[in-house]
Image 1 (cartoon, each protein chain N blue to C red):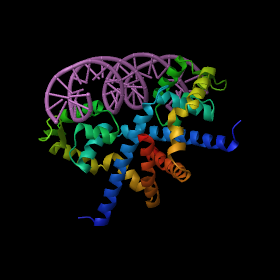
Image 2 (cartoon, each protein chain N blue to C red):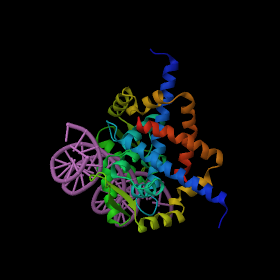
Image 3 (cartoon, chains in turn cyan, red, purple, orange):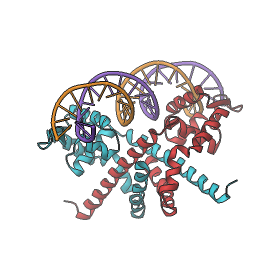
Image 4 (cartoon, each protein chain N blue to C red):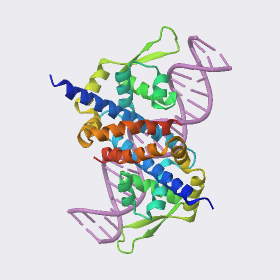
Length: 147
Length: 147
DNA sequence: TATTGTTATACTCTATAACTATA
DNA sequence: TATAGTTATAGAGTATAACAATA
C-alpha cells in the first residue's frame, strides 16, 4: 500500500486531467460551430495577419500539427483565394504564405463580427482579473500540449 | 475615431482570443493522438466512472454536444463491449449507460498508463501553484464555451 | 541525407435531418 | 406537444504513407 497522500495527489491530478479534457473538448466544439470560415482556416488566417507571412512548415509547427495537414488547410485557403504563395528566393523548396486582399477583407469582416464572438465573450463575460488569470493559464496548457 | 484605450482593450482581447483558439487546438490535437481508445470514448468512460451511470442525454449535456452525436459514441462503446444499458423503470424512453467489467478494466489499464499521460504531465510538468492556477482557469474556459 | 512540400487515403468527431417511441 | 433516443448522411479536421524537388 502506498501512502494516502500519494494516492490523493494522483486522484486530484486524474480529476484535473479529466476536467481539462472535458473543458477543452467543449470549447473546441463551440468554436467549430461558429458561423463563418472553418476554424482551422480562420486560425491560420489570423496567425498570418498577426505574425506575418510564413511557410507551410512554420505554420504547422506553430499550430503543433503535421506539415501534411497544414498543406491541406493552406490549399483550401488558396483555392478560396484567401492566401497566396510567393517563393522564397533563398530556398526554392520554400514558399511564403501571405494574405490576399480577399483574405484581409474576410478577416476584417470577421472582426467586425468580433472575431467569431470569442473576443466579444472574453470582453463581456470575463473581468480584468479573470482575463489576466486566463493569460497566465494558457502557457500551462500549451506546456501540457507540447510536452 | 474611438478612444485609444478602447482600441487597445479590443486588440488585447482579440489576441487573447487567438491564443485561446491556438492553445486549445494544439491540446486537443495532442490528446487525440494518444494511444488507446479514441478521445471521445475515453472521456465518456471516465465520466461514467467518476459520476456514475447516466442517460445519453445527460452525457451529451455534460459534454456540451448534441444527443445524436453522443448516441454515436455510446453506440461505439457498446459495440466494443465497454458499456451496457439498463432501462429506466420510471421512464421507458430512458436508459442508463454504465461501465461493463471490460470497460472498467480498460479504464484501469489506461490509468496504469497514467490516464493517457495527461495526468502524468500534470504531475510532472506543473508545480502545485500552477495546478491551482489551472483549476481556477478551467471554469473560465468553460464559461466561454457555454456562453 | 535531410528538409520542404505535395497528393492520396482513411479515420475520428460531430453536426443536421428525419424518424420512432414514450411522456 | 415535448422529450429521449435512434439511424443516415455529410463535412471538418487531421493523421499516415508515399512521393518529388531542392538543399
